[in-house]
Image (tube, rainbow, N blue to C red; front, side):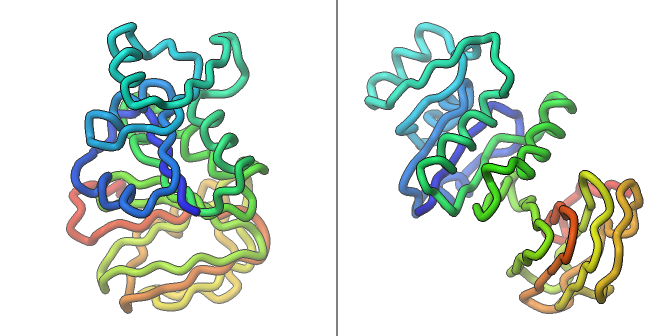
Length: 220
């Protein structure tokens, strides 16, 4: 089962949102993300958060679609996106696509990416999608497979510490049980050498970011 979670960030949207949602069993709006979802033709089934980003008019517009509103107090320990991700994981969804989680405030963007490491998401395939870029987390003992075009950019970034035993197949600069050190840029801007690639890690956590070669965003 696939769940789509829409956050309130300022990342790009468009027809690809509908493409992801075409096979979705559940659409969840994280507070103000519900309005973004509705604007792009993805009426949410559930709206979750403290509702501080929604006006009375927006709540009324959302209500016409009959979603479930799950209201949390503003004085809470979790962001609205964390609440939404926990919600879908607890309901057994094992394929989750997060839209609208990037752009805007830097602290929000980083926190949204770090949410991939939530213990509740272990065993859940979660992808943060922004236009034609996507980010996912590989945990120790796990692997991820990518599909794309030769020349696509693939960056491998350790988070929370060093990533040990990193092995790749189908990348231009292969790794074989290598260690990628937390804080090092060694894993940035690798490339697909084939239409498919595989990244494995023995220990640690590795953030994998995959995007097209022609993407204008170049962090180096």
